[in-house]
Image 1 (tube, one colour):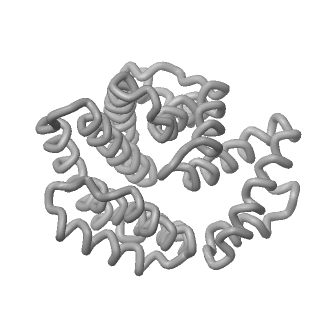
Image 2 (cartoon, rainbow, N blue to C red):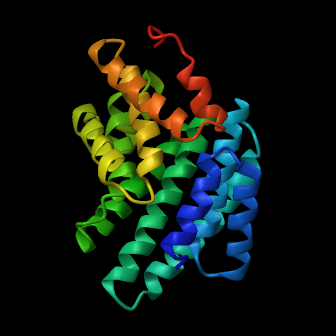
Length: 242
């Protein structure tokens, strides 16, 4: 698997707003490591962040799905061929991460059936990773998103999730899991801070006290990564913007 130091170095490029450089960084690692799922999945993440920065949901959508599909194949193979629980848990984490990103892409296009199926697969895989490695705090990012997103889903999405049998979610548990990763996570910590802040902003429509903490987190992110247009744009929102 790609060493953690290399993962963090590539992620720093993403969070600093150097999305093209991050994509190239992970693409080169993916070529050099044809059986490693992490570089392919993180290359897709770089494109997702790039699209977010451009405010274009459809940005490189087909390429992202191709990268994630390849990452899924690599992660399944790595999990099946792992010779110890450490390697299998790591492979399952990346498998769950790929399902999570692919589900996000499906939801953006209104494909709630695909999004729900991928969300269910993500939960099963990340739960399995946690059983093998209870110290996998990063696994809680996907599980927290699962809980929160189901609890806050639109009426159409809720109908699909009920038909598929995903349940109703748990926003409180989801927020707590996101908070924990935002404070204790390793490779998922920065993304968890961003996701957690946005979840707090959404819930602040009903609980205004949450807004202050959300804006504090976004302010810290924009100061830490001043060249990232995603954080910079969010930091300039009026204090009463939902």
